[in-house]
Image 1 (cartoon, rainbow, N blue to C red):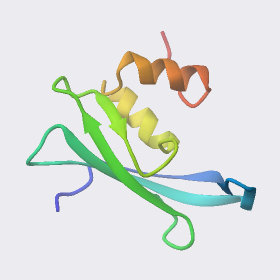
Image 2 (image 1 turned 90 degrees about the horizontal axis):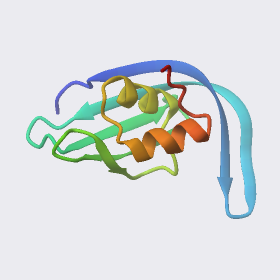
Image 3 (image 1 turned 30 degrees about the horizontal axis):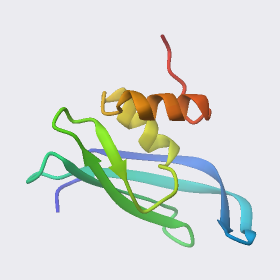
Image 4 (image 1 turned 180 degrees about the horizontal axis):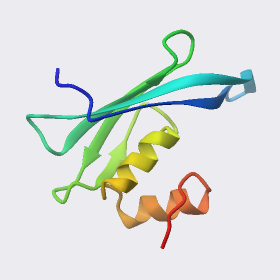
Length: 110
């Protein structure tokens, strides 16, 4: 496996929820986000997000021919650092930029 193209650690307020509501948290945790891009398939990548103990998520990233994110799985929403990195790298399409800007998860300077 190749090395991650992005690694970032930051304190995050974590809450674990299911269909019955909040089951753990809120808890401030030092979370590390890692992103890999496939060396064999430029349309594919994946991420991990966790504290190395209790909190962990991972999933896939899919990109179009122009290198912009078209889909992801593994979590309801991507980690904040992953969203910011994808934006900074020009890897978000207008739909994701609009979604995450309106929700407050992405701040863009014009």
